[in-house]
Length: 538
Image 1 (cartoon, rainbow, N blue to C red):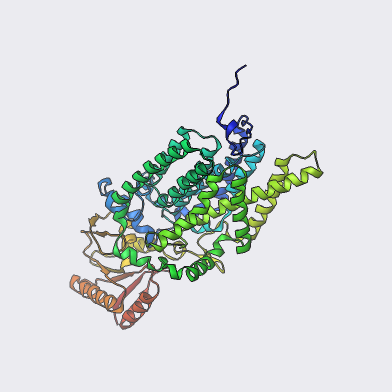
Image 2: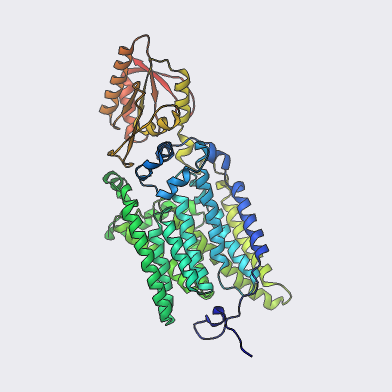
């Protein structure tokens, strides 16, 4: 009799055979994933997410869809090219945040795979591990503040997805699976810049695991695959992504590029800032991260465990090198979501240990059921403790607020368009300009490039000679623009009025406007978070 060995039968480092997995419980996986994805619109205020006006950092992203596809390499700016392309596939430009929501869902799916592809004694326990990992990602409060039209949810989905694929490659080694990982990494770079951070961790983990096990052929295969992926990532970075890097952008993020000597104090300060959106005390988070990493190792996924350990080290390195901001709420969203996924695996690991201990006393109980019950209690407690975060609309008193809830250039643009006379003048701060241009849907736009701001491009409206945009944020610039607008209205005659639109006015700019407007009569004509006013000589 000739027996055929499967790869899974010879995968243990100590030489003992591993039982080949039985048929995959596709039905239970489907039910679990469907239930988790159905929770997404329950936990998130999708209506507000899709209908809220775009604020400053979103407005230029939304505005990019109004330019021809040939301008995409320029208008994508600091956004990944693939992300900006996906926005063009959304039929309604007011619902572009559907792409944000899509990646929120993909992060949940990826997290399920991350936990599901661990070695489990029964398929049921695998389903429990996948569900616990995905639920932790779904319940993370940081997900609630990432409803904006930026690529940060894609960063999270890609990072967790790449780590999940590492566990998949380890589950049953084959060159085909390794090639799939390489192809996904290459494609992901078009949608997330942090692919360049997580990819070295993924291939580094596979390399180290192969070296420790002395699997030299596998080591060579991983090295070749990693080299191929690295060449593609480098080509995309320098060929496309680097166009979004400019001096103003570097200056904007300068505070998030610490020096080595500043790291201890910087890390402590940033972690304190991030803990409210983590939703658990620091000791609990650390304990679950340790448990999650140990669970990865115990369940025959050492490469994934190494990748998880390498991720914060690589992120810190690129932060110190001034390449990518370190531990900033938006740009490090991928680290928060990944931490939640690893913590979810930690919950599943602890639940598995508790179930095994309980089954020794209660032999008739099914371990998967007990593990599921323990996970439900722990994750249910986490959800209860963070209940105020769920269905977050952008401004919860005493909890948190985001710019989405406190800016509204759409209403201002619409009101002025409906009430201005042909000879009226409109003056606005430059933070309102991208949004004003986007919501002025019937006006012709002209791309102006290069431009010396963080975006790297500007937009002109050739048919709107009635608009004055304040070029700076200081009092002198505001006063000069107000004077220009009033004088322009006087030249246009016939009782021309000056409409004032402002958006995202914060810090020193707020003081500048107060000082500059002191010499004028200001009549507020709308209510809301960013009211429209009429300005005339005092």
